Structures are given as C-alpha cells and as structure tokens.
Length: 192
Ligand SMILES: C[S@@+](CC[C@H](N)C(=O)[O-])C[C@H]1O[C@@H](n2cnc3c(N)ncnc32)[C@H](O)[C@@H]1O
Image (cartoon, rainbow, N blue to C red; front, side, top):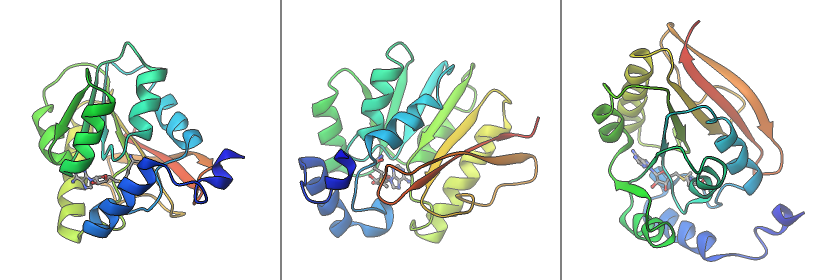
C-alpha cells in the first residue's frame, strides 16, 4: 500500500532524485527511488557473496537493503554524482562509498578473489550510448574472469538490460510488481 503513495508523499530522497534528474537526466534515468520491495529483492539476490559492489547507489534504497540484509558482507557502493555521494556518506558514515564510475571500480577489482556480486541500478537504457557500451564491456570482462561472479540488474523493460557476449547468459529471476514502474530482476554470469 505504501508504494501506491510514493508519488503523493515525496520524501527527501524523491526530491534529491528529482534534482539529479533535472541536472543529469541520462545518467539518473528515473524520477523515483526503487521501492523497498525492489531493493529487498536486489539485496536478497546477493546472498552468499563474499563482497557486494553496488553500482549506481543513487539516494540509497538498495544500499539500505544490502546493509540490513547482509550486515556481515563487505559492501562497496559506487555513485557518480557528487550530491548523491554526499547524501550516502551522511546516511551511512561507516560505509565504503566511492565517487567514481562503475567501470573504474569494477576494473580495479578484476583480480579480487571470492564470490563478488555486482548489484546494479545503472540505467543502461538511458545512459549515453558510449558510456553504456563501455560500462557493459567492463562488467562483462569482470564476470568472464571468474565463474563465481554475477551481476544483478533491474530493468523496467521486458528484455535483458544490455546485450552480452555468448559465453555469458542473462536470466530473468523475478518481476517486482510493487515498484513504480514494475521492474524485472535479471542476473548475468558465465554460462555453466
Ligand atoms: C536509476 S538511478 C538508481 C538510484 C537508486 N539505486 C535506486 O534504486 O533508486 C541510477 C544511478 O546511477 C548513477 N550512475 C549513472 N551512471 C553511472 C556510472 N557510470 N557509474 C556510477 N554511477 C552511475 C546515477 O548517478 C544514478 O544515481
């Protein structure tokens, strides 16, 4: 029920995302933060990870769910926009929040051992094409390096978030109806 009123009762997260959208619509990609249902489902998909890297943390709904559901799993949250990074650092003072591009952080972790789960809210469909292509290549390189790694990504579209090479496979794992708009959760990893 609470989700039905998300537009009618704007929070500070709604307002900050609105400002980010006005400043940088292509890389923000949405007017509404993810619902708790979507954030919880994204965090749940990261269970079993040794390290979680959140890409495009925005105002922090998924960060929040990750910290609550997986309190003992190290988390790196990545966000590009300075104002949103300031908000995240203020809300989660002990957390590892990095102001960087997703590619920069993922590339720097290429040789990191263990099961790494990338939990991404990056808006691939609205990012400028060169940024979307470079980021997708970087994520695919990272996943191809180790079969224990996976990407969890939501999208509002009925198809996979971006085209991946053949050795990687997309799987839609759920649809979250309690989100505006409803979102599909997809996972990408090496084909078994
Ligand atoms: C759709 S918003 C997601 C916000 C939040 N995670 C949520 O679920 O409501 C996408 C976020 O990705 C960030 N972003 C876009 N391109 C990025 C990039 N290349 N690297 C890191 N963050 C990026 C934007 O600044 C924006 O905050």
